[in-house]
Amino acid sequence: MKRFPSSLLVALVASALPSCSSAPATKPHDEGSRHAAASASLPAPGSAVLLRPAEVPPAEGVPYRIVIRLEGQREATMSGGSEQTEPAGEQIDLQLDYRELPLPPTEGGGPGPESVLLLLDAFRHHQISAGHPAREGEVELASDRLRVLSQKKPSLDLRGAQPKENLTPRILLQKPFAVLQPVVEGDRVVATLRGTPPAKKFLRPFGLVDILRWTRIGLPEGEVHAGSVWEMPRFPADPAGGVGLELPIRYELMGFQELDGVPCAWIRVSSKVDSEELKSAGGLRFSRVTATVKGDGYVELATRRVRRYVLEDEVRAEWSAGQGAATLDTRIRYRTHAELSQLDEPSLTIGRWADGAKAFDPR
Image (tube, rainbow, N blue to C red; front, side, top):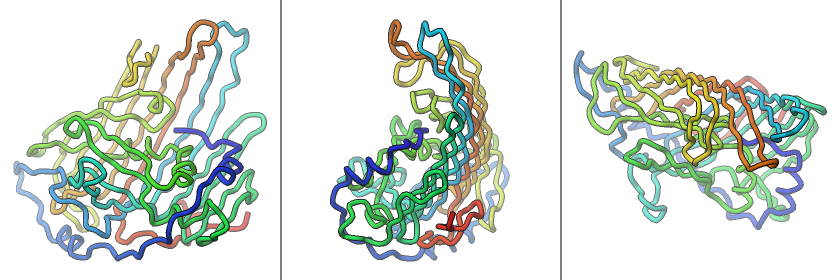
């Protein structure tokens, strides 16, 4: 995950381009789909089921929330250097509320059920970086308002469209901000940022692409039954994943059970890696990688949509980049806890964030 740069506010405001039109009207979540999911029955023991989505999302979208905490340390040293840099620790808490919509055919490959366009409803990013000096930054984006805090002091506070401003809440909120598409028969997920240039520039530093790929549960193409096992690769949402570390994720269908009154397939997620000289997906070589992943996912049997996904991982990795005296040796250790939940309604207004913090509370 990328870091929150200290010069972000100046760069964003100075380089932002003209804003787009006002946000479109929104519709409530599809009541028919919700009732269909709740009215499905649990399969008989030994039954085979399909888990991959068969239909594109409804036009108004399926609302989701991602809540993720990432904690870790990074050490970086230039080869041949007499001193090693002090470990840099950080903690990142992020909440992302969005809706999955059908991907228009003009976006390439759409509108298949696994290629989706994401509409942004709310976003909060809070990062604390240890060091000398320690830094703290926070971004709140919801309820037609954008606020940025640095060292707990407001640096930017915008509401509505504000036509004289190039960076406003309405070029971000309730606008398409990302596309998710599977490749290689769904084994991997490609995520790309979308939107106007100022919107993409604003969101890029927060590592949303890494988070969206990591929290995308891998679903098999054919029928499965309780006890079925399959494997798909994923990039963790930490600095090692950002430079191409790909972990083999094992999925096992444990059985069927109700979650929130909705019949679901219960999938156990796990991975364990302990390797030297591991090559990344981009060609970078890791001299050492140890990683563990565990989690549980629940997929609605009627709609085949993910209802809930909880994932925890711990990654330690070492790698070098560059040549000769310009080689940078990096060592990281990160822990991540991520939760993806389907919401009953889109989060168009936020009073409190998922962790209980009051939205836009005076600091």
